[in-house]
Image (cartoon, rainbow, N blue to C red; front, side):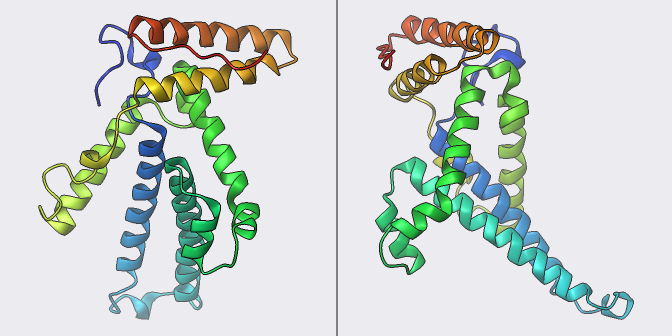
Length: 216
């Protein structure tokens, strides 16, 4: 993963990937975990040593993990701009309201965590992942894919489809952060967020981005 500013310490680098790419990485990691867990249920030779109910527990864990995979898939689609009605269609539901009620909280949580990670990269590991964490995830998933699927998807089967965070997205995040800061009542927390926002705005201006602040 490329650094936003080469000389900046790793802990203070902002995300290089777009938020749509981050959501897709979450989905890929969850899918890989499910695939490995499902594969482990295929052999039968260890059954004689298994405890009663072990197969049911393993299957139940897979169902739970699949539920999280579905949630992450919805978040990924929402970050890409897919509407609730289209998501409902994919789920076999009539109308998007039920899908929205079911998954909107997960989407909102991801957006807030991703915004905080971008705004305060020194704390990104607490709310989402650091750039170095993401680089390790990409490397692990790339190795996982190449080992199991060969080169059917090219030499960069994971990172090849992940878009970087562009200036337009960063400007939009800055506007969202400005609105968020304006609604924080705690003086210390507001000052911390304001300082972080000013750093991101300075970076954006240096790179030629247009700063569009939200309403006060």
